[in-house]
Image 1: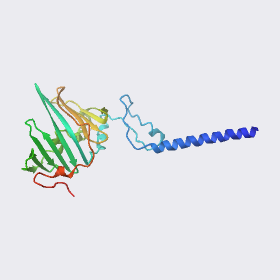
Image 2: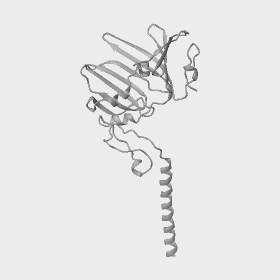
Image 3: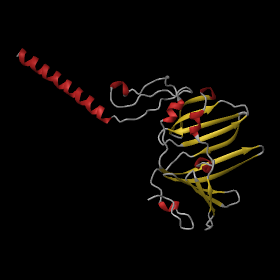
Image 4: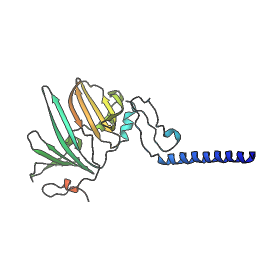
Length: 249
């Protein structure tokens, strides 16, 4: 009788061990490679709790002015997307704003912007040649892009310039969330002319989703584009009014 009781206890123990092993195995299968952003009160250098158990989760390293350039360097902009960018500009006694629809496919970037006079300015550029036309006109102007980049055509700052900054010119760098978009945030130190630049770069898409420029602590520029469509844009978006097809293949 005693032997039978011990046998039942042993079988129960074995069953419990097997259950624990199965649960641990199934939990490891549910893990996926990702970067988990720390909360605002996370300690510097805190790691993803899943990573401590082995798995394939990535270690979260706190972004600081000393490490942010390495973090930004890992980001990649998507090769195809579309979105709407809203830009506000402020000056003494006044302000203005406009929206630009941006479509990107490979090396080509198209912008469609409604100007203050009601006209719509269209551009398509690959960074080397830029095509410009207005409204529904068939006349297309073209020329060398020169120093006018696709970001310039979108009226947004190029956040990769962060990579060229001396570390001492970076005042603040950390993770921040803007309308549920997880971002790397960078703020430059005030320069000799009183300018400060702020960037919010999505860690999911690698796109600049918000930015501000201040002079003497007054905002003079602000942009925001918090949603992005990553589906393949229509090839028709890259056909000029004269019928020229720009997309390769």
